[in-house]
Length: 76
Image 1 (cartoon, rainbow, N blue to C red):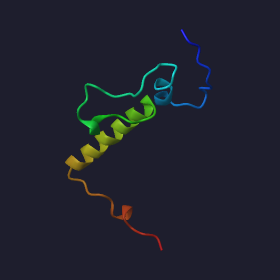
Image 2 (image 1 turned 90 degrees about the horizontal axis):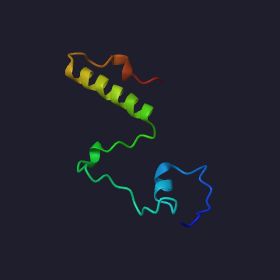
Image 3 (image 1 turned 180 degrees about the vertical axis):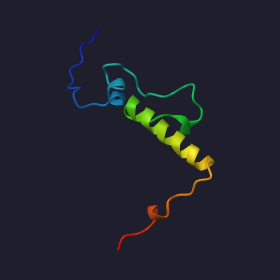
Image 4 (image 1 turned 120 degrees about the horizontal axis):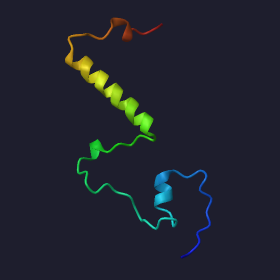
């Protein structure tokens, strides 16, 4: 076993996993062929919040509601 000396305090997980610590050249999702479905959020909480927003937008899209007019007004 070889000891690897490196400062990991400011490294994100992908950098760590592809570093000499884990000896992986790259990371890839093998069972997902639809790239648009790959989640790129930084945290689980961020992913959950994005899911809630998507569900809300989908519900709004499927409803008969219109966007409020003042949403698109410009301030002069």
